[in-house]
Picture 1 (cartoon, rainbow, N blue to C red):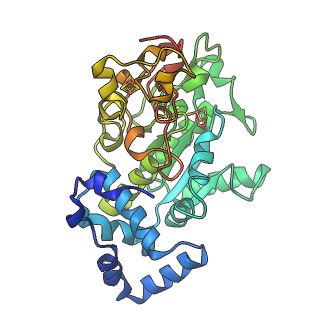
Picture 2 (cartoon, protein in one colour):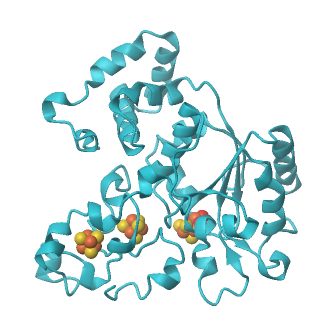
Picture 3 (cartoon, rainbow, N blue to C red):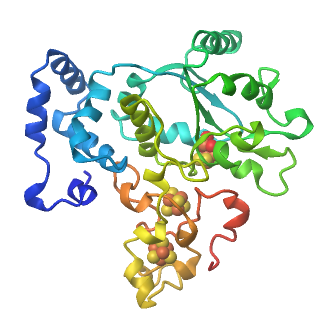
Length: 340
Ligand code: FSX
Ligand code: SF4
Ligand code: F3S
């Protein structure tokens, strides 16, 4: 799984003792129950603590916070109500989160949140679904987290995007201002994404621009689920959102460029480049700059956290970064295979 010492910069002798951490937890009955539940999912305590350690490091918190992060899942003091809206998008963001690594942490995060409305996974449909949304917003006015997936059409009174006869714009204007925080998951809700690509006839925009509000943005097409989970855990654990950059992105995830964290960087510095896919240089893992890599202009933590349980990420798999987490990447980062 994840190479935890790398995240904390610890030497092998100083690596964390998972057994010691688990012993602390085992003193409490509620943790025993929690671990029994985990085992029923096929997840060992060791795997769970490893994940919490990885998450804590990703969030930029010190190693001493690992047990507190574990507590957020094992014994949440509060389960924040969440209203999850879908607008113009492909649902890849939900898919990435829900299929992040069965049977957890997707399951854990869903149990940590009180998910009041989510079109992809809720049982309700039609008028009942509409009613659920109205009820949740009324009941948790000012307290719920609104997670938005997808961009909003703004031209022609928002006529280019509707759900249940109402425009995205109307729904967002009604729901978002009542939330305690608006988290935009994905490049579409953050910055407009593919819907906002030229010529953009519907006038699609990210939620912040469409409504003129401040949002917390977790861009990427799709974004890495761990950055969403880290943001939510930060909120539950510390009672506040993590520090953001000027584009509303959590600094813990988007503080550095792909290029500055890339394992191919030494090839870049040496001037050793791939110039053709399938070549010997490609097999040797040379730098992809000349194949159009946008890593130098893209802020994200893909090289460190990777995807699919930390298995791999685009550049390691031999594909240039296309800058999928940057604003207007369909217009600004294309042609994808041409040098910057
Ligand atoms: Fe956009 Fe999410 Fe890309 Fe898709 O819903 S960020 S098109 S992966 O799924 O919004
Ligand atoms: Fe930079 Fe891309 Fe080369 Fe990595 S592959 S060093 S991100 S240009
Ligand atoms: Fe996207 Fe580049 Fe990461 S394409 S997934 S930001 S490596």
